[in-house]
Length: 151
Image (cartoon, rainbow, N blue to C red; front, side, top):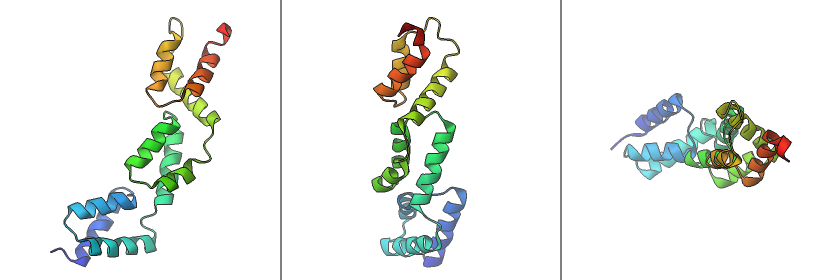
């Protein structure tokens, strides 16, 4: 059986490599055959020290994904869920995101993908942005911007 000193050391080692959500770290410790009481004890200690903070992690990741500028809100939410962040934390972090930011991201992505829009039909733009999680209204707004002369 693994002891408490080992689990604390392992948890810090894991956190030293990359920030983890509460869920991710619990899963990793569970896979190392630690018992639930040991995991709960070390998680409470880590939460007390602020080493694990789902709100802080979600805020950081959301800002990072926005800065990259190549993800839709749906894709960002999916990425945050993959990290095991709770739905209420995700809703809290993403509540400030507006459609204007998503439109700018979609426009940036489409401009990077297609250097010229000569010969590129709207269906191709719709498929490309739709496959990246952008909504119809955002895609329509991008198309209106790109093909302004047609409207």
